[in-house]
Image 1 (cartoon, helix red, strand yellow):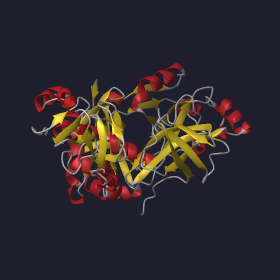
Image 2 (cartoon, rainbow over the protein chains, first blue to last red):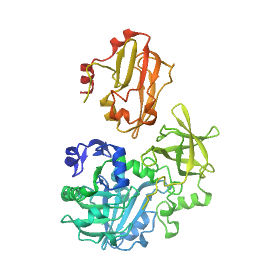
Image 3 (cartoon, each protein chain N blue to C red):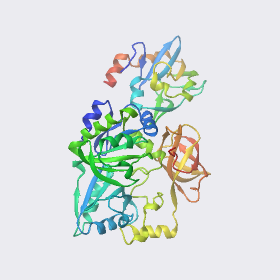
Length: 360
Length: 125
């Protein structure tokens, strides 16, 4: 079992540690709901060092990434980041990820659970003129999320954070060490992700915890990370997307740039688009208090029309929410459906997403 | 870990307190800690029957759903209505305000099959 550089800190803080993607990670410290609400109302700090970091150097790095990913890497300016995915030839998803354009190379941040698979997939398609490096073990990644994130981080850095726009990043010093600071996250709040050398992680983490004291900052575990992302209907690989789902039905058409030129999966995705998608990933609200969870079937007038991919209790809305694939034409907003929760039928309605909208 | 000495326990982490012929039933401090934030509990109705070590309800925590197992056979004579609005009482006070149901025992000898506080402590050791 692997540990992040912050493992000892989490244990000392009383976190409940669980195995996730081969890492021992904090699932919660004081409680999922409390941590969730802290991020929504103030600021929280996440250790996401389990995620993978690959770099791409060389004259063909751009061409390689254009082939491997579905978004248009050619549109990235230096200092800009892009949400994207890799697909198989059949259009199923290898992983969802973020690509960052640095001055002399590109960086890709991938899901921990897919790290080995992604690395192998990239290596299989490697071409001359690109040098791939797996920097995952040497890199720590922390996410500072919430409306007060900028105020917590600004005193620790020489960067002007107000100049970093959403999905842009800069290289500077944080708590005295070199860091990449991006205005990105997985919560729907304002905030930053801070990448540093693994050896520097504890120092930077502790500096942020200290700087966040006036805002009653709390460490946040994977449990609240999941409820926060679900309120935004952000996809989680392995739950909402995988090799059997394509980005168009997953609501990721906005990152699928079919016109950018050929890439792996483009042919299949063009066919899906031409034929029209057969099902769509939608958000649902449920009437009673039972939670519809991954794998529960969805019905319309007695006919099975879909499946729940993620479900939880929304701490912000104080009621259950769910995400799932629903066959056309039942995916339209307002459609009334039934989810089979164990032996019982639970009424569900397709609703507009995100479920939560931040008030600032 | 709080394991009150005056209670009996199941290996599924329910507790029982018997007064006269009526058993009050809930889940243990250990169980609520493992489940994390509890957001909903589905209980039987007054008048329903429970059977020893068969499910009598479900408990939804943010992360997962679990079944509740009846420590005893009998008739449900009361349920804790407060849990519908405030399921977090189970987290906050599992042996007090977080009680779930009261069951009139049909077969008091069944109590012999339950775990003593010491046995339960060993179980979760």
